[in-house]
Image 1: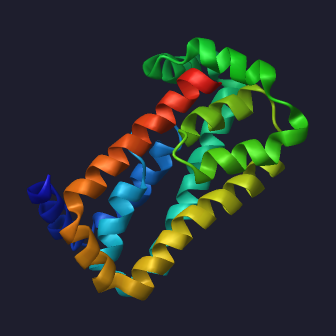
Image 2 (image 1 turned 180 degrees about the horizontal axis):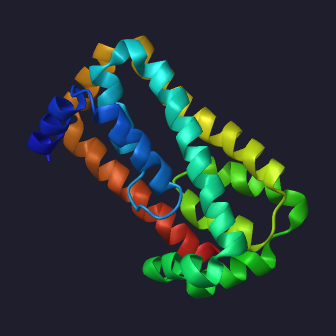
Image 3 (image 1 turned 30 degrees about the vertical axis):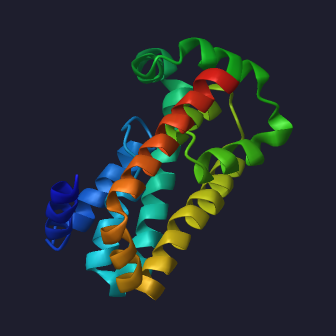
Length: 193
């Protein structure tokens, strides 16, 4: 894992790394299983002076991907959305989720999904399928995704080398912790919804 991490840091210095990050961010909000944070942080460590700007672009791209996911759920669920839900094995949970969603809590549902390790992509599709108000969806997505990505961006901008040293020193532990959080996010969908 450490060798992969060092290789990623090297790739992050390339000119195209940000474009790849923004593309991955859009598709992560629709179907891609790996959270954007994994790709964003190394790029920001290498390009620390642009960390906040990168965080803003990642937020925008995440919301754009979320809106695409919303419209897939709204208009094209039978064609595309159902295949994405099936890929993750959440068909039954998806039905329960969309039936139990109360429209009065739309903002908080999207806010929670956008901020936590719960897979945001499942909520973008279900929000469209449940016909949430698109304006509330966009506002909640901007607030939660912005809070998530810009907090990380600010910390990297402010404490870049210290955070890099911390990551280098505790890389294996952080990798295991991140994997556990990722699994817990998917399990929370499977067991609690």
